[in-house]
Every structure is written in structure tokens, then in C-alpha cells.
Amino acid sequence: MSDVRTFKAASMQEALQLVREEMGSEAVILQTKQVPGRKGLLPWTRTPEEFEITAGLGIKVRTPAAVQNGRRPASSTLQHRASNLQPAGARTESAAPRESIYRETPPERQAPPVCRTPLPEQSSDYERRPQTQSRFEQRLQETRPEPKRDTRRGYDPTEEFAEKLNAIQEMLESLDRRTRNQRSTDVPPELFQIYTDLIDAEVDESIAHELITKLKEHATPEQLTDSQASQSLLAALIESQVACASPIRPVPGERKVVALVGPTGVGKTTTIAKLAANFRLRDNIKMGLVTVDTYRIAAVEQLRTYAEIIDLPMKVVSTPREMQQALDEMVGLDLILIDTAGRSPSDDLKIQELESLFREVPIDDVALVMSMTSSVRSLEAIAERFKVARPTSMILTKLDEAPVMGSLLTLSQKVKLPVQYLTTGQDVPDDIEPANAARISRLVLGEDRLR
Image 1: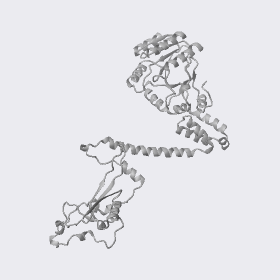
Image 2: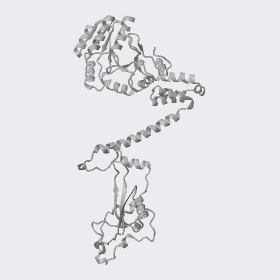
Image 3: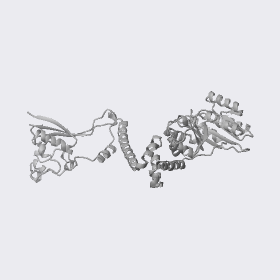
Image 4: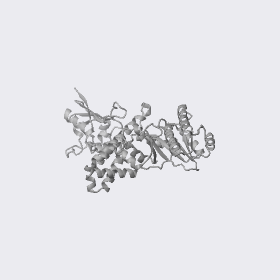
């Protein structure tokens, strides 16, 4: 009675070894094939491919008639005994050559030589293939492009893309972990506490590592061991890396037009009210207000109320022509502040309207207003989208609502705009101050309070 079994393994050599161990050298190899990996629960997960061998015992192997006549069949599945399939390096001198299974025929009856491609299980090159692969070779093989699959069988191209994306993501995460570990080991022990304080303050890790590197280069051994001296040097380094713009300085007899732009909810109208109150009540500057925020009636009424209290002229416009007309009517004023409607960074149409308005109207300075309650990544995206308005500085608001101040330094490094003003609350006109690099440095290090 015949005994037929199927064996699976990670390589062909391992599968053959299982056949020899389980069924002995008399086993007949009936079929070999390579089984692709199965899909996992997620579209980008797949089990490794396997090699499958079907073998049997008690099966009579008959020599095909074509072979008996001295020639190989054009198309047939040859059967082999497990004892004849040896792994690389396992052949012995006593092993009979493969040609010996064919009967000898007279030379005049032999068919001309035919070039045939050997089956995978018959190729000696396959036996010399290494049984294991390094992790690098496996990862390289996973990321190589696969041959095109038959789309008529329901093949989904997004599945292949997800697999490649998953492999790339794993490599990037591994690289990031190695980089983080390397950065941590580069920090000298005496500066490690300062380094962790910067990270806790939400200073970007690469910026914190750069600061520690510069501190190590410029400080003497005595300063490195003195925490107070190291902190002073660090404050000076941070101060040198924060760019600040001069506050608005109106010149009598020379009209200056300044516009505030930014996304919704960052406090543009309140900031304009603070600036107007300070210039009018404290510095006695002749000034006026213009608003193009016709989308929010409440914002217009809020600014109108401030204008009446401070006794300032105010114009409401909605088009570039109306804007130009309002500016022409405000003759003899030294400063004009323009309040704009908040634009969502994803609203291209509204941002293009803003760019069109500023292109047709002469404006001296444009301040981009952003709230420090947002993440640095979000603020970077906002600054990128508002580039069309050609901002010349930043006004950072709601510092009183931010949990830590380290993002001030990170934002200053990521967004190449100088900081002009900081707002620290809702009180008009008190909770606003001109930006100062030394003050920002102390806020980052927690050495100063907002009020």
C-alpha cells in the first residue's frame, strides 16, 4: 500500500531533509513547488514563502517509453528518489551519474542534443544556493519590485504598495532609534540634566542636541562642572539663535501701513486692539484702523467698539478698490493697522484672495499672527501656506495658555521669520510686549515668568 505525504519547510534543502528523516531514502519525490506567503490580518503583513515536497513510499516508478528508446520526453514530470537528491556538498564519488538511468542506444539511433531548461528540483545550481539569508538580504528582497501580477484575478495594487510602505517605515523607525540612542550617548554626563530639561520644555531634540554640542565646545572644564555657569552659557547660546524684529515705530509725517494675517482663532483682532491702544493712548500716535473681516460680524463690531473707546477712525472694506479708497481717505495719519479675516490654512481660495488684496494695495509690513497653543508642526504648516501674503515678521499669541515655552526656540529655528511681539493674556492694552531674544531665552529655560 502506498504512503504519500507532503512536507513544507523554509527552504528546499530543509524539505528534502524532512523527507529523508520521515520516509527514508526509498521515498519517491512526486512533486515540488514553491508556496507564496499567506496574507495576514493587515494588508501589508504576509507570512514567509515556503517550499513544498510531495513524496511517497511503495510507488513503482516506471521508466517512460520515450526514455527507454534513448530520448527524453518533451513534456513530463520526472520522479526522483529522495536518496538521489543531495544538498550542496553532500555528493559522493559513489553516486551514480544522472545519465545512467537512460538506456544506451546505438549512436545512429540517438536523437540530436536538445537544449532544455532544467526543472527547479533538477538544477544543481539550486543545490548550491545558501540555506539561510542575512537580515539585510531578506529586507532587500522584500523591498525589490515584484513582477507584475495578473489584474484579472482580483489583484489589488494598493496591497503591494502597502507592503513596500511598511518595509520603508520599519527601516526609518530603526534609523531614528539608532540616531536617538547615538545623540543620548554623545551628551556628557555633566550636561545630561540640562539636555533632559530642554527636551521636557519641548525643545526639538535635534536643536537640544546642537545646543549641548556647542556648549561642550565653548565651555571650559570648570564651567561644565558648574551648573550655574553652564546655565548662563546656555542662555547666551539660545539668545544668539532667536531672531527678533524691531517693534512698529511710526514716524510723524510718514504714513506706515501694517497688516495682520493668520488663521482663525489666534487673536488678531484683540492684538490689533492692544497695539492701537498703546500707540494712541501711551504714545499719542495719529492712527486709524481698517478691517476686511466681513465674514465675522462679531469681529467687526468688536474692533468698532475698541475704535470708539480709543477715538480712532475705522473703515470696513471688502475689495482691493475699497481698501485703496479707505487708505486715501485716511490722509495725515502716521500709522494704519489692517485687520484681516482669519483664513484656514487649507482654504486656498481665501488665501489667494488675501494675496490679491495685498498685491494691489501698498502695505509696508505684514505680521503673521500664530497661537502658541498649536504644535510646532502645525505652526510650520501655517507659515508655509501664508507665504503668499509675504509676511515680514511673526506675532506669537496666547503664551499664557501654552504649557511650556521651549517651542518658542523650536519655532524660531523652523520658521525663518523674526518674532516681533508676544502676547501673554487677554487684557487690553497690557498683555503684549515687543519680542526680546534675552527674554525669550529666559522663558525657554523657565527662568522668567510671563507676568
